[in-house]
Image (cartoon, rainbow, N blue to C red; front, side):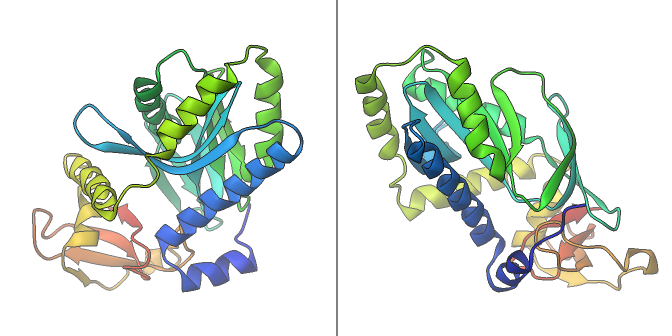
Length: 274
């Protein structure tokens, strides 16, 4: 089973979970620069905030804009074995100690991104969905049926783009793609108010889901730590590798609810519901 490298462990101990996520996006961008170097030309954008019909935004991690179409990358930084099916709402990451943690299906997540991207640029531009996991995990059993969806580890970025590139013979006019690039580029230079509104919108959506409600309580409400039961001695956070602590929300809508939270909170906000 894949384990974190010494570098990953050191970085996780210094930087927060948001920084680790941004680092993953930066590494994906670096892989795409190799694609450019070997003749498949495109332009790269990171953290594009697309407008949605409800007045909010949808953040896209990394875009690779080419005459073949737009490659939309969703970056994930889980460790351990990854299990998932394209049609399942949740996927599972299993750590070496057999602890299982669920997360929202990244294919469905990126499908929403593609929806708003097509709404913004027009549906005549080919879009390719690529879910990129870090090298420290293993894609143990991941089932994908859709032709324009790929789930890969980061070191397969170049090969995957090349494969899609060669399978698609049609090209969009260079002027049209440059126009799209310039429009999308403007959506990367958003102010902090837009970013804050984006985060608040995500939190509001989570509050409407009983499966996620305790997660919001951990980040925004006062919590009290409880003794960890003996059968939970080896619970480990899948995001940063630290210990999970049994906690209880003491105020707000989730008062009295217990959950496991990362011991590095607030640097890492991972939650595992009971």
